Length: 512
Ligand code: NAD
Image (cartoon, helix red, strand yellow):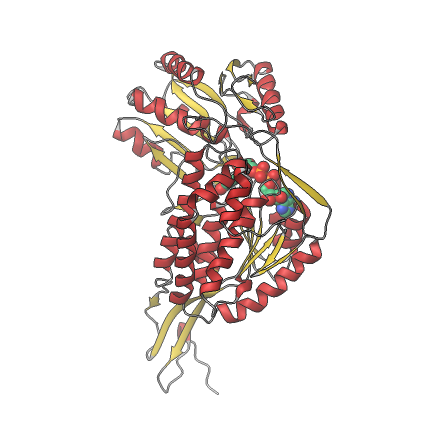
């Protein structure tokens, strides 16, 4: 029987063997060493390819710079039409792309479909935006003058993405950047190259319908950290949008700052939720479970710290353990599975190590063992872990990219908020409460210090309409909705004098 990965690639028109580099319509094999891609589901080899070299990154940057010259003067609405048609490709191939996401990233089918839907949604958002790249008109202090601002395309945007959202994060960037008039050079995670290659094939299908679009507005360079480093260092790329771990973001930020470029960073999270005595208990169980175990604890927004009022902590713990024990774990492509595998054995070892450290720091560890029965052989499957621990345990400051939920007890809400904010990261947060004062305090300047602040929903599962991102070590970037598009453009302030006088600003007299 043909492997589902093979079938999905065929259906999306991906020519094989796959190539690591694409500049618009052209595919080029990578010129670096051979790499095998393995599925986290069963460890099977799903592709062989050669990675891009740093010289190939430079070639992509040159092509994207050339494409930019034409793309920046094509009207926004026409750029929007390109994104609309790309969105149609995604609609047509939603299941095929989702199949690849499951096989490469290990997501359950529902979450993979959701990830592709997110791409479709951001395309829709970007199409509307393509006619709304508004600047302001300010009242000039001088007579006979008009003061306005315009938003202009910025230039090629480098996108470095993580394995856990292998396609949606690129689409958030690409859809906005394209309507803003910028080409994209994508360096996907080396763990998930096939999904990226498939997206580029769908872009090529779109390009075939629109000959006026310069093809090199979409470039792909699959490779390791060296490829990302080269992209970050390229002076031809004014904006680097990097999603991944804090150490990666720190390295990229320094490189980009060194050349005074712009970076948009979406880094690690360490997300907390406060559960107050007035919370709806059943809603709490559902939102906690989805946030903590979805994508096997491998979302940047995964719930990692549960800060529960001491009066309800035991009851909540017992109920969560009961739910955790019967969670269907296994092949993520099988109907009914709610937890698939970790991305690789290294992640499973990191989870084991974190649980051992938590125990050393006084934690009581529930569940969290390896799962070997009823799951495909060759993948790294684990039970979600619940760890009761004191609020001052050092491990609470660390993001372990696995399904570990720390349960911390609190007495009063101000203490809970202090515990909540006492981590270096600042991505997503939530409070579950039926008390409007508690909810508003959490959303206030004295509340959560995160970029995403939710009430009566979990920490994960954001909509594309809002600006997505976080504070502190999460990097401060905002992507997707609201006015995140402004980061992909440059602002020009225009002052036009339509009088025959030359009054100077601030009333300065300078008579010659
Ligand atoms: P990672 O940092 O290992 O890799 C991310 C990407 O960066 C990959 O493409 C990798 O090749 C590249 N890279 C690594 N080192 C680099 C360097 N020095 N220069 C340039 N590029 C480099 O992360 P991962 O394991 O793929 O993903 C998990 C992490 O990503 C978690 O910390 C998670 O919280 C974070 N994440 C954050 C968001 C967000 O929106 N805040 C979203 C998804 C994932």
